[in-house]
Length: 107
Image (tube, rainbow, N blue to C red):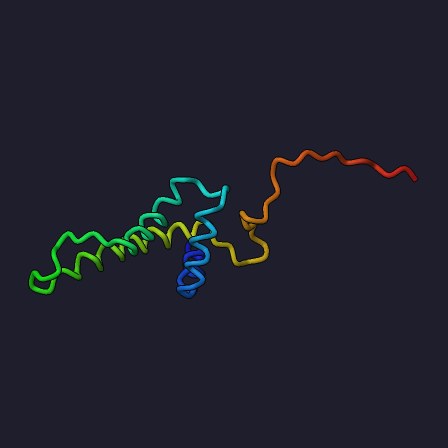
């Protein structure tokens, strides 16, 4: 998994956001793996202040710590599902639940 983690470290911000939304709406991703993404998006929209802003300048510290923890969890989720190599299987390109039959050619 270390090789995949290095690939997600090199992803740009917009690439990570695109993958976050892809994973969020993908049916192949477990609900448990979607939770960090949802929490991060909710926190960005409405941050929770554990320490009020005016207190000695430490008000931003709790926001930073929570954001870093959530980003770490999201990076782990991205590392689990992100496949850049052509040899890896991308969950968005897997065809499942299809019935087929192989017919032999008569020659």
